[in-house]
Length: 411
Image 1 (cartoon, one colour):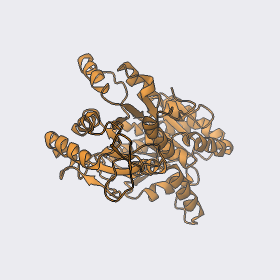
Image 2 (cartoon, rainbow, N blue to C red; image 1 turned 180 degrees about the vertical axis):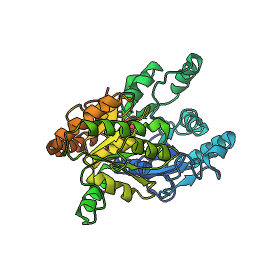
Image 3 (tube, rainbow, N blue to C red; image 1 turned 45 degrees about the vertical axis):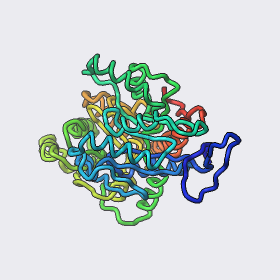
Image 4 (cartoon, helix red, strand yellow; image 1 turned 135 degrees about the horizontal axis):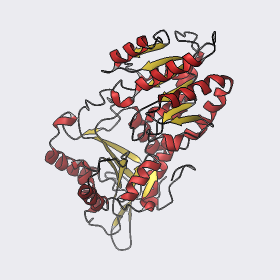
């Protein structure tokens, strides 16, 4: 249980201090603010509850068209605006958020998006004076995956740096996010990792269940990628590297197949590319899968996971693949690669613009097939450092003044 007091109401036990002010004993109360809720968010809520928090989730929109599959309704959900993300009125949302926070009276607010009016409302709420001097001020923590881009405007960055001083702390993914915040002059002791997490335990259980199922309509040995089929994901590079790797194999050798989970505007181009490179019989498209359990089935039987994105602030699919016990290969432009991939231990990295570099890695995976299980075991061990439990514990560190947990490879 967290060592904190909260403003619980009703028949809760109350303790009068000698100066006549009231404190209410109970678990610390936290409000989380996201646009909508999907499996990643639910995993974080569970991590907060296991850390001892009383959790109330806020959603500032009814739906998020960018992530239509985020449609969870966690217990106690407060929907701040009756509109999809693109139609939320910022002034109304600020007012609704501040009113709801005053009603819930949390000790800690975890919000996402420094540019969002809900985050500004959270800052205002946490800076309001409280009538009882015995009650500690509420804390406002910003969760983010932002990294430094190539076209950041100096004036905007200066204003952002000033605004970020209003937050009590930051929960981030890893090295790239820490480095960006440091350029904005955020003190290192205000930054904790743990934001980039998935439900490792649930994925592991689902994988075990899938492997016990005798039905298997999949190639014997395949590489897996999971993403929306858009240009930024650079899936074409994987198809081209597969072709190069296959051509270099000795005659009669059995190559890896490639399974592509996801859909999008690039699919027809990718199918044509596979035909032109004469690997269409090795490339399999599943289309969009609506249920996560279906996706996990493909993780369960893959030989390794590949992500070739041109740019990715983090890339939670790497967490998923590692929780499923897979070796992982990723472009160095994927933010998670610096924190999650240990070269030769659980996977490999390459440059997103180097098809040949990826082809060399595919050949290396081919030659070490007997050792891939060991790399997958290392993946599971590494990703445990980025778990919902770490997220919850590090959120709590902003209340109890304890140092946050730090993965051994993070900055």
